[in-house]
Structure formats: C-alpha cells, structure tokens
Amino acid sequence: MLSRILRILRPSHQHTAFSATVLLMSTIMLSRVIGYVREAYIAYAFGAGGQTDAYVAAFTLPDWLNYILAGGTASITFISIYTRFLAEKREADAEKTFSVIITVMTTVFLAGIAVAEIFTPQFVAWMFHGFSPEQMRLCVSLTRILLPAQIFFYVGGVVGAVLLSHRMFLFPSFGPLIYNVFIIVGGVVAGKQLGIASLAYGALVGSVIGPFLVNAIGAARIGTGYRPSFDLNNAAFREWVRLSIPLMLGVSLVTADDWILRYFASSGVGDIARLNYAKRLFAVPIAVLGQATGQASLPFFARLFGEKRMKEFGETVNGSVYRIAALSFLASALMMVAALPLIDLVYRRGRFSFGDSQETAVYFFWFSLSLAFWAAQGLYARAFYAAGDTLTPMVACSLVTIASLAVYRALFHAFSVVGLAIASDIGIIANAVAAAVLLHRRKLVSLAELPWSELGKACLVAVIAGVLSWRVSRLILLQGSRTADLQSLALSSITWAGAVAAGLWLLRSDLPQSLRRKRAPMSVPEKPLAEAAGMEP
Image (tube, rainbow, N blue to C red; front, side, top):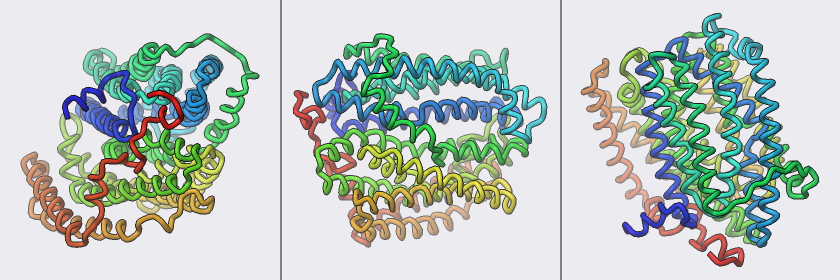
C-alpha cells in the first residue's frame, strides 16, 4: 500500500484514471484546507467590512479578462488536440502547436492587461456602483496589482495541460496549493505595512511560483520544447482557435455566479465579503466531489469517445454522475444542518463577529442545496468536450446565464442578499439539467440509463438524516460559544452518519458497493492511456 502511494507521488508517474482521481482529490483537499487558512486569516485580520468587499471585488476584472481571452481553452480544447498528437506519435506537431499558442496568447494577454489597467476605474465604477469613494479607490488599486497574474495563470494552464496529456498530474495539482500559500504569506509578512494590499501582492507572486513555475519545471523534466512562434497558419492552431472561440464567447453561470453576486451585493457593507466566505467554504465539497473527478475524467472520456465505444462512454458518464450526485445529496443534508456551528468555528475570530457568522451561515445553508448539481454539471460539460463539441454547451450555458439575471434581480429585491443565494441555486440547477437534456438528445448520454431509483434512495436517506440531525442539533443553544459549536457539530454529525448508514442499509442501496469497486470513478478499466492508444506506457 505504501509503495503504491509513493509511486503515485512520483513526479514522473503516469496515472490511470483511478490514481489520477485519488491524487487530485488529495491535493485539492489539501489546497482547500490551505484555502480555508487563507480565508480564516482574512476574516481574522480584516473581518467582513468595506475593505474586504473591495479586495474580493478586485478579482472580478482579472477573472473577466482571463475568461474572455482564455475560457477553458488551456485545460479543454488544447489538451484534446495535444493528446491526439501524442496518440498519433506526432510529438513534433504537438510541440509546434504548443509554441504557437503560448506565443500568440501571451501577446494577446499583454495587450489585454494594458487596456484593462487603463480602464480599471471605469469598470469598477460601473460594476460596483454601491461602493463608497474610498472602496472604489482601494478596489482600483488592488485590481491593478492582480491583473498581471493572468498571464502566468494562462501560460501555466497550457503547460499544465501538456503534463495532463502525458498523464502526469502531480505538478498541475500542486499549483493552486502553492498559490494559496503565498496569499497567506503576503498577508502575514506585509500585512502591517501594506494592509489588505499585501494579499493582492501575495496572489501575484503566488501565480508566478505556483501555476506557472511549478508546471514549467514539470514540463522541463519531460523535455517539452518551446520556441517563440507566430505561425498563425499552423493547422492545429487554427483548429484550436475554432474550438476555443465558443468557450471564449460563451458565459457559463459556473463562473458568472460570483460576478453576479458581487454586482448586486455591492450596495451593502460586508455583504460581498460574507457571501464570499460562504461560497469559498461551499467550494470545498464542490472541489473534492466534482472538480477532482471532472479534471481526471476528461482524458478518459475523450479516449472512450475517440475509440467509438459509445455505449461505454454513456455508461461511464452516467456512473460518474450517479456516484457524485448521490454523495452530494448526503453531504448537503449535513452541511445545511451544521451551517451555523461550522461557519462560526471556521471564521469567527479577530474582526469576524458572531453576527457575521449568523449571516454567513444563512448563505451557506442555501448554497448547500445545489451541491449535487454543481458536481454533476462539471461531468456533463466534460462529456461534451470529450466529444469535441464546445458550441452546444456554450450556447446552452449562455442562455441559462442570461435568463438567470432576471431571477437574481427579482429574488434580490424580494429577499435581499439571501435571495441571491437562492437564485444561485436555481441557476446552477437549470445549467445542469440543460446539459443533461442536451447530451440525451444528442444520444451521447441517455437520461433513461441514469440509476434513478438509486438516486431516489440517496435523496430519501439525505432528507431523513437531515431532519433527524436538525432535531438533535436544536438541543444545543448556539450563542457564540466554541464549546457549544463543537457539541452541536458533533451531535449532528454522529446522528447524520448513523442515519445515513442505517438508511442505505435498510434501502439496500448500491452506493456503498459502487464506491468500493476498484475501478476509476468513471468506470473506465485501469488501462494506461498510452497503451490504449497503441503506445508503450
């Protein structure tokens, strides 16, 4: 067992679907733990006031720039083309395409960043109309610090895609972890001198050392060649542009949700910060259950589709969605019940008060409802990408996003900031359902073959476990005591675990056996990708 773990952690190890998912789940969990330390430090040092709102808001324009110019082009379209070249033993063509994309897109990003730096004040004034003049100035300053990081994120993402194509997951998985560490280091080292700007400088340095430098070291180890090239006539580059344009032009609610929340919440002091704290904690189970499986699944989904094994392709996607959704339903029940003690234990210290915990816990409660749909939509999206279709999900996601704007506005006016969290749930549910229906209509993944009865069992168990845990948790009065938080969390967790175990056993659920099967989470045989493509592993 130990030797297998050590083998997985070797930088040069070429992973199967199973080992890749285990590694990604582990490193993403570690990254989220460090992300928690980061958010806890920010809450302690800066609380949930106006300057924290400005700091969170400062990421919006850099995120927009990255999304518009990059979309998912590094991890989705490029990896598909590069993997195909490797399978066809066309390493020289793969390196030429890599060089052209890096050179052209770095130039584009430099121009984009220059324009964004100039017009940052106008963007902030439009996007965050509720900010005070002091918040406006701070947000502009922080945004300008963060903008150059997007070059390193993008180049690092392309280099990381090369490593993923070689089934080397270790280097790409540690990039986000290192990035989070440097944000914390920036605050601890320079917080007194620079204030909250120290976090932005830490993020900039972290983007260089984490996503960029770590992946570059990994690429150097396997001899990935790079030569500056503006060969716009390169056939593979043109194919990449054709596949990437839908991703660049489309707007997915998965990304836009944060932007929309910030836009509407900018008029209330601390509202952006509290929503962000709730969303960041909610992102932990999303990452562990959905992101890790999604990242590891794309190369294997692509392999099945490329080999025209359509029945296995559909079964694989459905199996993945079933397991992830069932686990998410169960997890949501506990998260909703334990929202207040969990938020209070995680964040309340320093300038973050118990009142902040109570408000943040309400947002976390509502976000938790949609966990299964956040996890499932990532797998459905990758099923489209594996099939070489980026246009269909782009159009569908963009239409859902546009339609959702009216829902956000209506619920915000009706229920204030809580309405935004509810609107977020409605939007992501619509996004996941639309993707599932479109895959079904294209006869790629049949909805009829999704194990609905097993999903129903998981939902029923989740509801019963949630109700029982909630009734038990009410025995502890929560008024800001750490001891009471721990007692409430322990009681609700034990009750939830017992109810889940008993419920799955009484209903004879297939979920425990399904999770124990020694197959990849996507039910793909553990056959190395290179071997499947006719290459030596």
